[in-house]
Image (cartoon, rainbow, N blue to C red):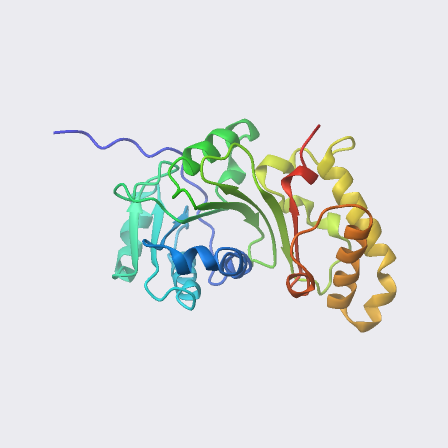
Length: 265
């Protein structure tokens, strides 16, 4: 008899809430909608879903509007969490014990969402974790890895393609009401960036520039935080920073930039 290999990774705190990952789910539906519609096997993985099965269920329900036959697999290292989630399993949602190796019986996930997983790791572990996951993606697949606050009001994530060694982009999605300044959100940066938010690093310069644009856009606050944010991102783009998408996404409190904006020369 062959012994099952040990899952790659360590058990997370397990903190989770219903709708906690709504911001990244909404972005996935936008950014990967065409991939899902055209996929022969619309397999999506929620890695490290935590102590309750809310986030994989939410993800499945949101993606069904794009691809009704989507299949979501929730993967957790903790066998107790997997057992507890089984009552929600059906033809569209299953649960497996595992880690970064993504045990999905040889299938190639089109999307892997790994949220609030790498936050507990050392920064030196991030590249290997990315490599392990992206090596198992479908050739047209995406890894979405990031961090959010406990209620899902503020989130950052990076996106990587299959087999990639570095991200394609960085996205911020935030609740604009009550936002003091964009750099206040730095505490939720992905693990690959959070310790680099110091003078001399590109991510620090990016946040400082974003703060300056936010301050310049203050007069737009009379028309609401959303209009101020749209003006902020427009000013950021006009200052020479490459920005993805357009006002239709910005009005949601989103900002996506190519990874080259954050990469060190």
